[in-house]
Image 1: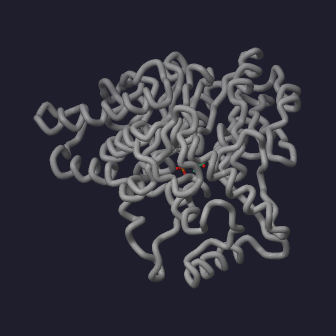
Image 2: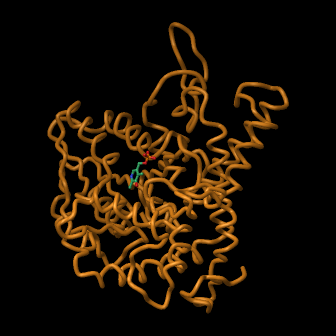
Image 3: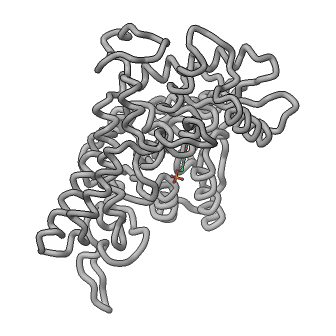
Amino acid sequence: MAVSLASTSKQPIGDVSPIDLDRIRADFPILHRTVNDRALVYLDNAATAQKPWAVLEALRTYYETENANIHRGVHFLSVRATEAYEAARCKVQRFIGAARPEEIVFLRGATEAVNLVAQTYGRANVGTGDEILISTMEHHSNIVPWQMLCEQTGAQLKVVPINDAGELLLDEYERMLNSRTKLVAITHVSNALGTINPVAEVVKLAHARGVPVLLDGAQAAPHLPIDVQQIGCDFYAITGHKMFGPTGIGALYARYDLLDTMPPYQGGGEMIASVSFDKTVYNAVPHKFEAGTPNIAGAIGLGAAIDYMTEIGHAAIMAHEHDLLTYVTAALESIPEVRLIGTAKEKAAVVSFVVQGVHPHDVGTILDLRYRKRNRLPLAKDKITDQSVVHLFQENGCG
Ligand SMILES: *Cc1c(COP(=O)(O)O)cnc(C)c1O
């Protein structure tokens, strides 16, 4: 890949070629539009990422040339659509290192993935007096489904604390694991703090006590290479729109043996093998968990997003994001009124901060206005120019 990493590092880092920023910018049509007569600066990737042409083209090509319902028709288009949908499942499988494609359930997003586990595995395995462990740094999607399960079953939600840097207190976590613990549900990367949790260690400690672990990977999938078998987790949730894919599509990974024994989530078409008024036989996994016509185009778009990220390569993405994080951390720390929230040693390129005496809502509004007026971020100067920072951020996951 050619070199044009603005002014951060023109030298390859190790044997990783720097990202070709101009080429990547060109891949994202929304970056070609203006906002308030200025080139768009987009820093909200932790909430949702923009989409490259490759993803938009995949959606369009699907609807223009292959659209049909899947798994049931014998006609040409239905077969093509089914193949494309199942090929997307295999892309997700390889992307997160699952052992087999049947371990990937397509869903609306990470939220639905956590709810599915809570309402199927959770309902079947959690009872009165049992405990579910989450952490202080969870997204609402990994809190509320467990609160609902606790209300339904009489179980208790226990929250593992973090330190001032935003790091999980592993000792506390280990102490809180006990014979009542039925499930651990923890984020891989925090959307608010950027913290990368030591998930393999989290899993090891839980498994030593026979407790299964769900990892919320919504924020990890855009930033890190993921290998669910190496991590050893039982469940892993991702969401397409945070990793350059469409909204309304995500996936749950679950170990095959667990998935196979879990009761279905919703009833309907696709999830059944045979139906009569006396008895319904459920389909095999993963179809048992994909009731109704799924988001076929979304899955294909997610597959295209995975291809796009894979082509750039995690090593290049991580090296680039590391540069960005180093730069923005130093720049923000040089402003006395600014306090960074989340300074974990292991941290992804997600940056949160507060400005002393100013409500975060006002900071957001003022930065937006300031940008409109001056077309630059109010950051301290370093060897990178303000303009190059604007470019760098547009490509990356700094929320
Ligand atoms: C965005 C996010 C979710 C929820 O994803 P949805 O696409 O809204 O389902 C869950 N966890 C984390 C850490 C997130 O960043």
